[in-house]
Length: 193
Image 1 (cartoon, rainbow, N blue to C red):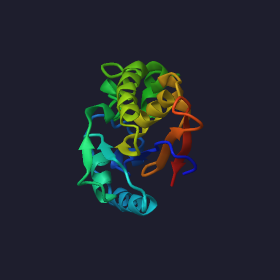
Image 2: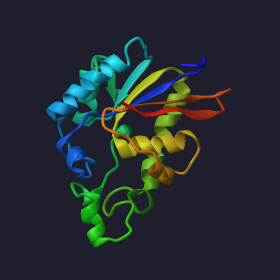
Image 3: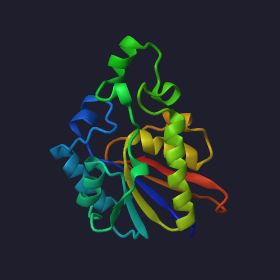
């Protein structure tokens, strides 16, 4: 990387049956598919040569097992605040199914009945960001797409709803960091495959 400030590497978990089908997977604890396991192993090569002061994971098996298969299981600490968005009544549904009943719906704007709003997810992201900034070190984070998208928006001081514009593929790597000073958070890389 191009500066001496800390870098936060974000890894979205490998493929699951529901990420493949487009079903909202918040708190349902889905395993990785064989392709997801292979992609998680591939993360190891893409992070080769990097060292981290800490490795944090969502408690979901899809995120934690991605950390294990990427070679970081011994160091990986589960953090509840890294859990994916709680989709409540929309858990297991596709966006197409939700839109059929609720035209114009957008999770980042409208949230989920019996689940979380963007503000709820943003508050959890802010807790993680506070811990990252306090650590002031290179940290590796494994989680899920919508949570990481909100985390990126909050990292650069934008409302959690702005996470809607950041797309993340499974087993992708993104990097948060700083530009000239620790008061200038930036997104250094996004959705790298």
